[in-house]
Structures are given as C-alpha cells and as structure tokens.
Amino acid sequence: MSMRRRGVVAAGLAALLVASALTTPSLTSAAVGVETQGTDNLDPAIRAEMERQSELAPAGNVLWEEQVRAPESGWASLAYEGKGLTLYWKGDLTPGMAAALERARQWGPVVVKPAAYSRAELQAAAEKIISASEQHPEHDIQSIGLESDGSGLEIARGPKVLHPGTVPKRTGPVTSAVQILQEAGVDVPVAVVDRPEQMQLTVNRSDDSPPWNGGGKWEAWRGNNDRRSTCTTGFGVYSGGRTWVLSAGHCGSPPDDAYQGVWGQPGFDEMGPVHDDDWRSDLLLIDAPGWYKIFDGSANTSTTKVVKGWGGWTKGELVCQSGRTSGTVCAIRQSHERNYFLDCNFGADSDGDCDYTIRGIIEGYQTEGREATRIGDSGGPVFVLDGAGVRAKGITVGGGGTTFWFQDWATVIDVFGAYPRTG
Image 1 (cartoon, rainbow, N blue to C red):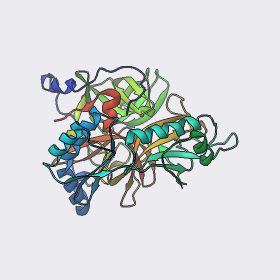
Image 2 (image 1 turned 90 degrees about the vertical axis):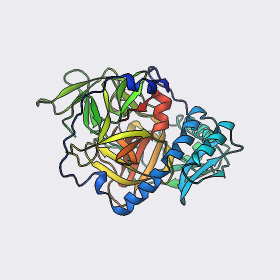
Image 3 (image 1 turned 135 degrees about the horizontal axis):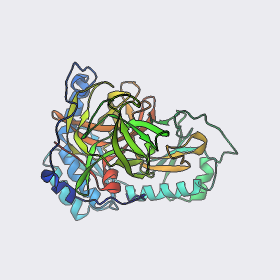
Image 4 (image 1 turned 120 degrees about the vertical axis):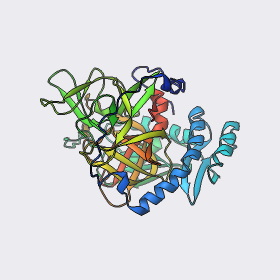
C-alpha cells in the first residue's frame, strides 16, 4: 500500500508515545442542545447492528495493525459475515498474522477463508490497467474495484468523477474498457459492469476555534482573493510528535492557507497553512492543532463525540460520516475498495490538476435510500460507534446519491504515519 507523496512528514508509532506529554488544550464547541440527527438518535435496528460490530472492533484492529506492518502479505480483505469476522487470505498465514489471529479471537469468532489473489496482487494488476488507460485520452472506465474475497477485479464503465460546477465535455473518440484490458495483459479475472450513476467529489459546523474539532467547515485560500474550496475538517491526528488536522487532498495544496468561518464576518479565523497533500490517496494535512473530538449532529450542531481509536475498512460494516453540509449521515455499509479515474473533461481539483487516479477508495451505500453525502462534506470524519464515543475509519472523498466514498485509515497511516488524536 505504498504511496507517492509531495513532501515528508515524520511518522511512526512513536508519535503515539508522546501523547501524554503534550499539553491538553481547553474544550471547544462543547455546548449541547436538542440534536435529532446525531448518532444518539439512530434507528434502533441500525444502532443494534453497529454495536454488535463494535464489539468485534478490537479483533479487527489486531488484524489490521499486523497488515499495516506487512502490506505485501497474503491479505485480501476483512469482512463482517454472520456473527463474526472473516479474513480472506491467500496461501499460508505469516507467523505475524497467525499470532494476530490468535489474539483477535479473544474478542469473538474470526474465520479464515482462502483467496485466489492477495490485495497486493490485485492492486498490482489494477496498476497495469491504469497504466494502459493513460495511453488513451478518452476511455469509458469509471473505476477499478478489488473484489473483497480476492477473486479478481471489477471494472465499472460509466461517467468519470465530476468536479462540482463542471459541465462534462468530450474531445475525441472513446477507447473501450475491453481494448484497454487487452493492452494491459493482466493475469487475474476481470468482470466488466456498467455504472451509469454520476459521481462527484464533495468539495464546498461553521464557528469552531482551536484546537480544531473534526466535522467543521474550512476553506482553502491562496492569497487574499483566491478561494480554492470549501470543505470539512477531518480528524485531529498525531504525526511526528505533534498534532495536525486531516482532510481531503482535492480541497487544497501548498501554499494554500486554511481558514474557518465565514469570510468578512466575525469569527473568520486562520487555521494554518496546508502542509502536505497526496493526490494518489486524496489526503492532506493542515498545519493546525487538531483536537480529539468530532461534531455529531446536524449541519449547525455544537454536539461533539470523543474519538477513542481507529480501525481499517471492513466489508459489511456500517459507518457514519459527519459533513459540514449534510451533518451526520449513518447506515452506510462498506462494500468495495476501488481506484477512481479523474478526467480533465469532468473538471479539476483545487489546484487545476486532473487526469489522474485516486487509489484505495472505499465504497459504501446508504442502506435507507438517503443521500449519503453532499457538496461541502469532503474531508469530513468517517467513523463507527465505540461506546459513548467513536472510532475513526477515514475521511470523506465523495459519492453520488446513496453511493459514498472515503479514504480508509490504513492508508492515512501509510501516507502520513498519522493516528487519530484520542481522548
């Protein structure tokens, strides 16, 4: 899961060890009113399922922590199936994963099922298809998904990811996915499906103060007259012995500065500069102190929840997202890992960049038929329940209708060596 980056952030597990030595800042935005949209008012059936899954979260964490240490292993995926977890794995378990599996089973049932291909092998095959597609200015591949059981890849044909405010255009003949597959010469099974839905990045909790909570509004500005985007703060994170604010990479890049509030009105505050962004994973860090709470409720809520830890993506698990436009939206079930194509004919990011592929995006679906995410939610927290608090799963990237995309926490660790700040 190695990523190419623009810049270096000192990283590692050692960052967690200094947490207790740092000064604890004062509480922010903690007023609690009547809040009907937050996780305290979930549908009872959804809450019951999320709580059952939460009981197995420590088992999943043990397995994910081992996978982060050895990403080129036989790991295909982790899934909630039946009353427990299923680890899809190719070949014999490594000694490290065998030991992790024994520890994980202390929290509940975990079974191992054989996979034809590992995640590393499937992503390597996907990279061949991405490279072949780059030889054609126009093609009909929307995304490349990795089957969670390790059986192969799934190519989705359909409109490319749309940047808000863009009118799509075509400039030449369209090369078919079938031709690109032939040129790529991959040696894993590939299914081709049609996905006519238009997806978009969701660029666009409004009066926070430092240290910054997750789920608040922030804007990227370059100079005094160039507003690049309006997005949502993700989690406060530790990396390199200090704290940062995590958000989505398409929202900004150096030398942008991050601000919170409404331009021209009291309370419009500078957070700090965009320190680093990674276009391959759609992640960025803001050089500003991040807190261990996220907003949970409507778009105007002041209710917050404490972050207690992190977890990797798990097929079938229900997650929530907290965006500055949508507020908290739950009952989103994780389904696939995908690589999405961004075409210049469908717009560009805040820096004018396009014609690139975002890797490792997790796809899910809002199970109640509600809109999963809206413009302005990009970069916001994605989380699951953990008692009275929450567990970080990643940050919002985009979606369309009931479809939802986020970047998962294992990739955050890989790119920035960053872990969520916890209370």
